[in-house]
Length: 321
Figure 1 (tube, rainbow, N blue to C red):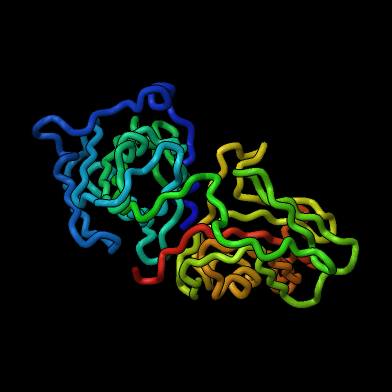
Figure 2: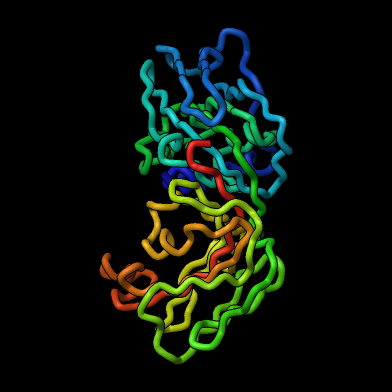
């Protein structure tokens, strides 16, 4: 369901960037106000959308108000999301994370209606936003989600946690690695750790090294994990991907995934039992990396490459919670 978070990163009109256009509620008689959402927070909602044409007004309501901290400007949120498209007098569910697991939503969203909807959100809120095209995907639509430029979208967002783009491990330092394994240099605050790969051959089996030991709950299969990471190719010593702010992605964005699925096997095996707040180094052989897929040519990874990941476990949403 990461396509849902990625699909929010679209260009906005200048008015949305500068002023967050839109109103907090509709005029009397607006059909958009007839959208109703019921159910328990963090559980799949029951959504009723009128069998009528949507109006052109933005509507934002909070059927559930949380008691957690206010979401700070610039922070990403971990949320469960259900997205519907409303076309003419019909509607359909486009995507939902309530089964697959919550996802990180970026702080810099490209939809002006969602910027307005989440501007004063708190952890624990359920936010319902009805976005006519001018507050959503506009005339271009969103082909990845099969949303046209004429579709109104209905969003149900349960705000679970928030994370700064520079969130990092918080535990006690254990080691910097080294010897037959890569050395990891602690970065300046808010930057990715630096990996120095030795000239020796990589280990044949998965290697897990705790660099910083956290004190939070231990990760278990089925948990949603929020992490910062930097990945390097042992063969070249070059970084091929990272979540930390970088020249290619100045804002940065923590990465969320469900442990036990959706990531390479080396992550699923190497992160099980790691406490939140930890920084770990995984050296992953091809068989547990991209070898079975024939490599990742776009990232310069061949099917025989071993990979080095330094991962900060910054959050966890327990399975079923």
